[in-house]
Amino acid sequence: MVYIKNILIRAGKDYFESFSPETTFSYRKRSMFGHNVGFYLISDSVYKLISTPDNSITVDSYLLGSKKSYKKNVAETINSEFDAFVLPVADFLKPTQINHVKRITTLIKNLDIPLCVLGLGIGIGLDVNSFNDTKTNETMEKFVRAILEKSKSVGVRGELTFKYLNRLGFDENEINVLGCPSIYLNGPEYNITPPEINNDSKIALNITPSVKKYANFVEKTINKYKNYKYFMQDIVDLRLILFGEDLKDIGREHVRDYYMKILNKNKAIFPINSRSWINELKNYEYAVGTRLHGTIAALNARIPATLIIHDSRTQEIADYHKIPSISINHINNKTSVENIVENSNWNEFNQTSKTNYNKLIKFFKDNRIDVTKEYPNPEIAKKEKQNEMGGIVEQIYSEKYGINQKELLSRIKYSAQKEVYTYKPPFYIKNKKSHNVQKKGFLKRLEKK
Image (cartoon, rainbow, N blue to C red; front, side, top):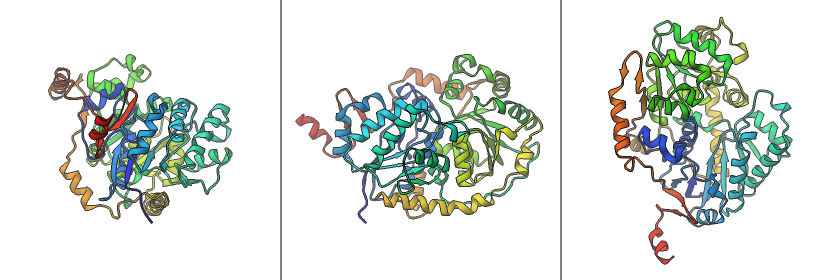
């Protein structure tokens, strides 16, 4: 088989690159990772997996799918510069993503190169079977049809997404259930064992503030365990931790009670890249929460983690990968971390990981994308060591410790030298023309024009 070598990938940044918190936050006024740092786990896992010596990989810095993607010259540039477009995606199949999906569909229709799309999921409540929004259905059917014109199949997150797409007319030859590639960021071999939890245990807590049923459990946990940390993930929380914003201004007023307890005791941190996130989690004994990729990050750190399920996204990925989980509907005032640990079993997760991973590898090869042959890969490990990551952001202020001098100095430097902190993507869209500045012959082509 002849593999495709020159690849454009949907990703915020190159996996091996590290950027300051300020650069990460300020890029395009929406951050380099979008609205949730969990996206890094998805794109980084795929980037790392296809990082073979022969592959040339360029990130799109999430510019494709923006309003400029409608322009035909964007597709023309991609067609002339690349041999394939790999798109790790997320829960795109939902009403709130209609406009974004329409833009990507328009771009895809204008491409002449093969696609490889994976990680596609439905993003609604738990009752997927009753979901039947005509506008959403029509948009998503056109999106998947456009993908299949340029790829052998589409990789989806789980059975719930498969059933939804099956209702739209797609079959098992067109849709592959593969889970989320982020599970394999540090390889497919797992041997997670149960933790021994006590009041002094180091707990990594992740929170979805919009899930109201979770509030009592959060309160109980932060009051009982003195060695916990809250791993934030949303862009609004990065804004909060960087600049000390008012909770009302960032839409966190409804969780003020437990947020203020966490913040006043200096218990919130924010990882701004996947490697620092996972490395920090290695210092903890257990992770629990409603965040899908907060849980997956902990598993990649090889520490036990339990996911609290609250929607279709969390449900289908937990089911596919056999991630220990508990429904939010089973969380009550009596539920404790110890209760959840006692009812969590990681054996099935450990045992199924390699089998599921092999399905993912087959999917890539069926779509003519070569992958790394071993984990840990010596060449990748060497490159990771050469490109050490910083990236755990601490609170700039807390009631307990006052102003964090290190974080304050970082903000001052940023304010004084904003141009130095500007991220310049390797692929960018400029006015009427889009150019990939890393490819050979770029300057000569520009001079001719």
